[in-house]
Length: 440
Image 1 (spheres, one colour):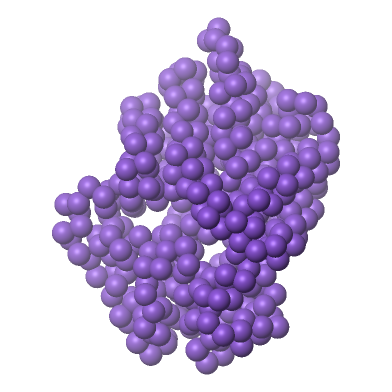
Image 2: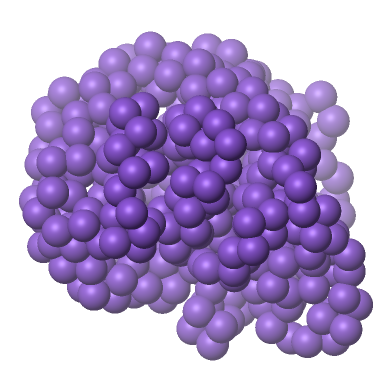
């Protein structure tokens, strides 16, 4: 099927890879990966994580990229086309599921991005450095009406990029943000590992406790982190794939995306953990790590304001680049299903996400429960549905053929059982593991 001439496309290989890496390198990489790496055996955790992310993560990305390119549409259109190819119905209904779930992710991600914006502005002015305990500074923002204004600013920034489309909006923005993010991470890494006492944090991350490999929870956490890290949701990466030309090398792009994402995750760990150990702060602070624990570090660090500016600018780039992929999946579905213009679809998506987020922005307990429901119970189902439709319903032979179109090094027949049985089986298993171990 040839893509409609009016459909926008990514213009360069690196533009696409940076956009995908931007989607993957979100807040999860900046606090979840360092915490899990240290909590579940240090270097021992990397063994199952690297296995899962390179074998299953790249396979899942190939599938979603190819599925989207094959259909020339996002999740709703692609699922519908796959079902119709086999004389089946309900494809649109199935495709609506991951899109609606990503709308839920968009709702809370805009709130968190608003927090990041607030901290970035505060780092520029130095306000939070003199605001007293970092816990009280955060509680003055989270769950409070003040959060709404910053949430609205996040809506404006991402909407302003998306109205320009793929090549002139998302691609251009991520080509700027991702190299800058990488540079910021390098500067922060050097600063962190040279702090007095930082070696304890490095040992915490990379001295293996091999006993953790005998614990099922380590493998469960590594599996969940691998899927979460590369944004396998059944919609986000699929819609990016729908903007690819037929001569694009999908296997290479999937491998490059995973490598860039993993490298940045490890860099984030080398920034955060040595700093927390250098100042005697709990490294297992979880979600509070960004907004409470690290702020305490910056308040006590020589040159802390400058480091805080760089750090929260990097976090802002990561958050916005993730939001672009999340929001685009919803916008594309609105454009495709209702024939709305991009401008109208962006506007209506922004309005719905903003209004739905207001009750969560002013109630932290409701926010926490909502995030748990979306990320722990609903998101993993999308990856499973996409894998079943592309590898089973449409057929693994068709899937591999589509993956290999434009590839310099096509994947061989070995890829078929990996995708059809291993990936889909694990995608289904992760749903139960997510509930059992609260992976999200």
